[in-house]
Length: 64
Image (tube, rainbow, N blue to C red; front, side, top):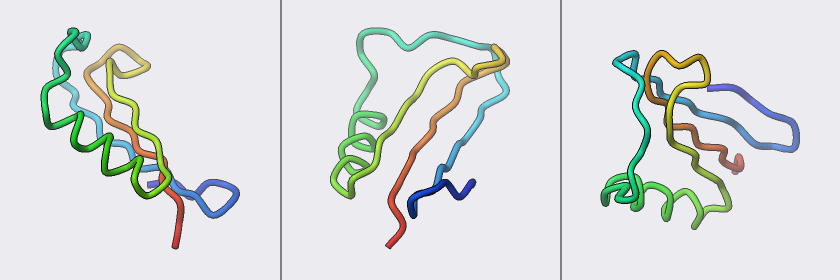
């Protein structure tokens, strides 16, 4: 978790398994998570880790 400017924070979860790319069907888990994050004014990204060593789910959320 990282605090960002403007009363926001970033939470990232990395899976160190083999890097993959999300297909056209993201599944209900990521869709539901993105909907809930959006409802509180945040954003969600999910995909291959930037370093290419797995998969990352990252949420940016407002504090308070």
